[in-house]
Amino acid sequence: MTEIEQLLERVAEEARNTRPWGWTSLPSPVTTAALARAEATLGFALPPLLAALYLRIGDGGFGPDAGLWPLLDSPFADGPAAVPQYLANRESGPEDTNWPWPEGVLPIAYCCCGACVCVDCTTPEGTVLFFEANANGADQAWYVEEPGLAEWLRTWLDDTSGYDDAGGVKELVSWPDFRIRTAAAQAE
View 1 (cartoon, helix red, strand yellow):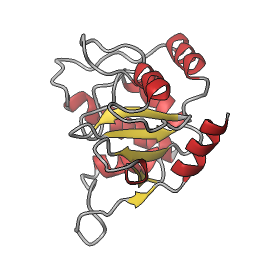
View 2: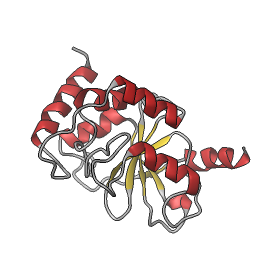
View 3: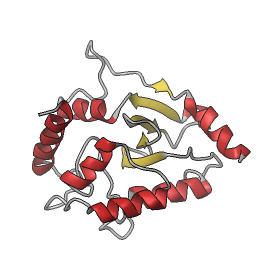
């Protein structure tokens, strides 16, 4: 069994035991047709591990922080879903800002106070980014939370998210690609 298969099994087990949104049961996984529709709508493929989470475990409602958002449709009238939120952010920027939203950066979960976790789908490992919606400017809004989705999931499963190796609070590193990615989008 590969390391990723083992990780998916651990996530599935934890998902069966926790419901961050208080759902009574884990949502069913998305179908391959729904994943294909989501990727066609987005204009890019999800990193393999993110696709596997939606295809094999469930359509949101599990995972770090407040749990993954559903991919296409929320079961709640005003609840978020990843694809519609990405499209809204690309069209108008994050709420109450004029900041451009980077292409290929899919929001997948809330943290708190308008902050969200995103996955850079342009990277095969799915770099996990933290977006701080209440930052004083776009340059202070984007941080690398983990170099890949697998690391982000492991920190959740091992209950080490937010802490460094010495037990102190982990300091987030600014995402260097933000300016490059948004400048290229504005030039188009």
